[in-house]
Amino acid sequence: MVILSPHPDDAVFSCGHLLANRPDSTVVTVFAGLPEEDSPLTDWDERCGFISGRVAMQTRRDEDAQALGLLGVTPLWLDFLDAQYGSSPSPHELGEALLDTLRSLDDPPVVLPMGLFHSDHLLVHEAALWALRRIVANWTVHLYEDIPYRRLPGLLQQRLQTLATLGLEATPSTMVVSPVERLKARAVSSYVSQLRALGAEGLSDLTRPERLWDLHGACGGVDGG
Image (cartoon, rainbow, N blue to C red):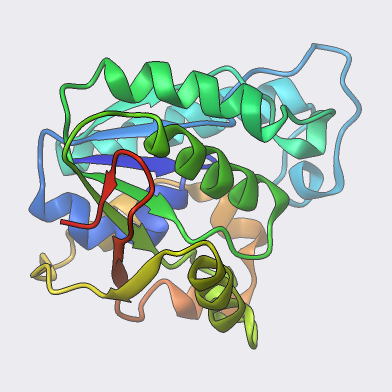
C-alpha cells in the first residue's frame, strides 16, 4: 500500500496497525522539506525541545526512519515545507507532485488522510483527490482518521458531508486490520520529540482503535474498490 502522510509521524500515529499488517508498503511524507538554517524557531518546535527548524525536521526524519524501519515500511520524503515554516504550495502544485509520485509506484492501493483540522492535512487530502481523479487506472482508495485531530467535535462529520457534496461516498472499511502486539507502540515511541509536545489527550488517542474508510465515487480514476 501507499500511505500519504502530511508530516513525519502522521502515518504511524493513524495507521500503525495497518502498516504492521502491510510490510513492504511505502509511506509518502509530503511536508518533510528542510527549512533554511536561519529560519525562526517556531512555538511547536520549541515545545518539542529543538533549537532550530532545520534541526527539528532532520530529527523528525530520523525518528520517522526508525519507526518505519520497525514496521518494515519504506519512507519517501517529499521536499515541501511544513506550514509552520512558510508558504504552502497550492492544491494544484501539490497535486501535480503527488500525481507524479503515485504514478511511479505501480498502482498500489492508496490511503490518504481525512484532512482534519490542520491546514497541511487538509491540503494533502485535497491534493491527493485532485491527483487520483487524473489517474486512469483501477485504484483502490481508503481514508484514515487523522490522530489526534479526529477527537475534535464535529470535524469527522463535516468531512464526510463535504465528500458527499463532491459525489464521493465514504463508508467504514471492511479491510481487516489486526493489532500487532506492541509493534505500533514501539514505532510510536520512536517519535520522542513529538510525543513530548502532544499532550495527554493526544497521547490517549494513540491507544484507541484506528479507523479506516473506503472511498467510492465516479471521479475519474478513483475507484473505491
